[in-house]
Length: 340
Ligand SMILES: Cc1cc2nc3c(=O)[nH]c(=O)nc-3n(C[C@H](O)[C@H](O)[C@H](O)COP(=O)(O)OP(=O)(O)OC[C@H]3O[C@@H](n4cnc5c(N)ncnc54)[C@H](O)[C@@H]3O)c2cc1C
Image (cartoon, rainbow, N blue to C red; front, side, top):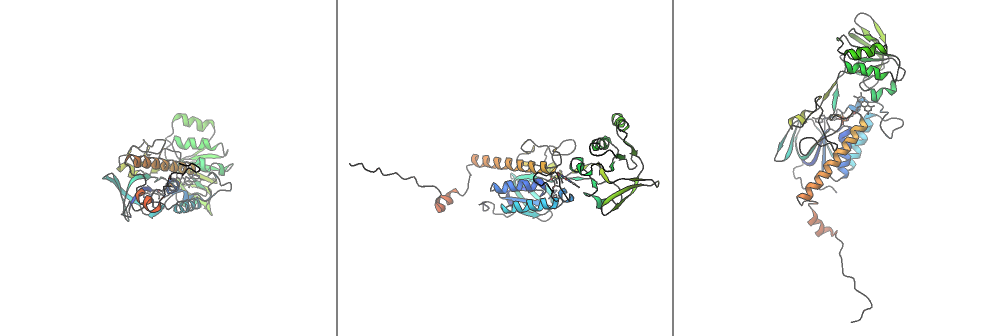
């Protein structure tokens, strides 16, 4: 059983995970099963919610809803005594070797902190497209390219990344255009040559509307009255990394703002870990889940080593020995058949 009484204040936990999306939940399951007193604090905006049918997660040949995956993950973690708080952490500091997390509702304290706060994909600045998110508007070629095979696809963007997206899409469909949405193209000469070589049309005018019915996109409408029939739209406007807490703690970030981690998800700050899309990993659910598990394993190992170093492994050993008599008695066996 998890030993909670070491932490008298109910807001002080052995491990706190900020972020209850795919990475945070996966970590929570491992931490709960490792008997760690764990709290997951989540503001409830996992990107996984946007995916109605996840087709690339191991073990679901018919796909699984993103929401369902999150719900099941939480149930699985709760089964192992992990606690959950619905809150948003606004600030964090280190005091007396404790991370002090200030949420909108409460203050929390912990010695080990895992940040699994994810990212936010910037939606395109096109009116009327929000309802199509996850249905016919996507951010991720690797997640959704397969499901748009042989359809008409528009890539919205004006930089090298947009061109590479369009080129990558040729594996899935021959009907691909780039729409700059009125922005001046910023791709370099090499990328411009590729557009020519593969005959990818470029629509340069501002998109004034997206025609769609029941979340299915039908066409892009341009201010000039022109119209391009498409079935799916991918956007490459960029991502916002939820790295504010890591920044406040002085953790190293890469040039994009992703939290740098080692193979075990340890950051540059002692006792601080990070996993999922907020790190430089490829932003996929199965990778986020794997990273969450890796972080939990590292936390568990580090806590174990700390307990050995401080002679505090199983702090309740004395009571256990007294009350539960868990040590089998080693009695001397009497030898039979020997006379004095
Ligand atoms: C439309 C769409 C479709 C996608 N489809 C697929 C797909 O088919 N397959 C696939 O593999 N991937 C897909 N993805 C990507 C997938 O959703 C991510 O890879 C995955 O959710 C990343 O997990 P994560 O735990 O890093 O982040 P998230 O799951 O986004 O979780 C982060 C959590 O942290 C919380 N949080 C952030 N900051 C704070 C704070 N300060 N305090 C408290 N809580 C906080 C958020 O509320 C959120 O719940 C899709 C993404 C989108 C947007």
